[in-house]
Image 1 (spheres, protein in one colour):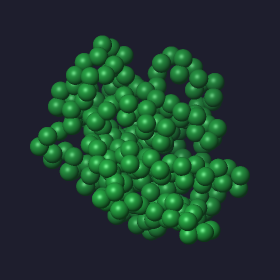
Image 2 (cartoon, rainbow, N blue to C red):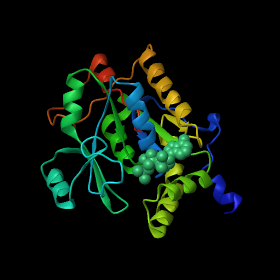
Image 3 (cartoon, rainbow, N blue to C red):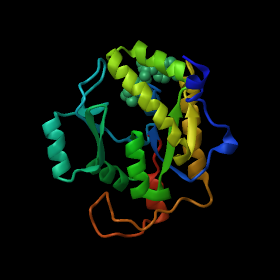
Image 4 (cartoon, rainbow, N blue to C red):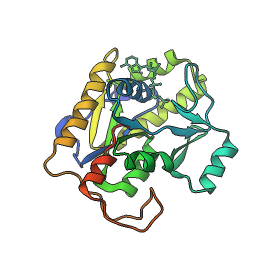
Length: 242
Ligand SMILES: Nc1ncnc2c1ncn2[C@@H]1O[C@H](COP(=O)(O)OP(=O)(O)OP(=O)(O)O)[C@@H](O)[C@H]1O
């Protein structure tokens, strides 16, 4: 691998990263550790609600249906789309992934902060829907080599699929500037990455000027457009995904 290739996943220096606003979705290239970070966050932050994504991809070893993802067939997934049950969805590496609205509605009503795991396409869609009422965190590995090693060690992809993921990762990191925060999930440093995500949540909640949702069609409840109040916006605070 050439140095030029390696540097494609290098984090831009802080002064070069634009800083929009708040926290909602955890995103990052395949294999960077989004699921690992979420799993750990779940253990240390019980008050956060992690929206379980629906997916048509096959279950991986150790995954639990309804906890890690809702595993559905492609047909079932498309029925959910037709019934307008998903906040956003995308075709990712040949499989569908989408965020069920119902959970968001239920947990917002209960006053929970919500964390979503999304891919770059999903983050773009959510940014359009949610504007600055949400916080977007981009998770990266320290360099491309580490990312590749993780994907190889995970043993879930064929070599062709792996190459597609790496090529996609190179494209995805170009979108880092559309995010609010970038968190490095360094090799063997999962705990530090999780701590940093927790600090981001805490700092966002301590802000004097809380993020305010903008007028937008109410994508979550399908009702009329309205302005969310500060307490509602706080409830909508999400991490991840990330
Ligand atoms: N900090 C870390 N150090 C070493 N290994 C890690 C670290 N974080 C995650 N991993 C490992 O890297 C692999 C990829 O992580 P994970 O499956 O969480 O990635 P992901 O971003 O959710 O990928 P995908 O988008 O393809 O589902 C897993 O085997 C995981 O255990």
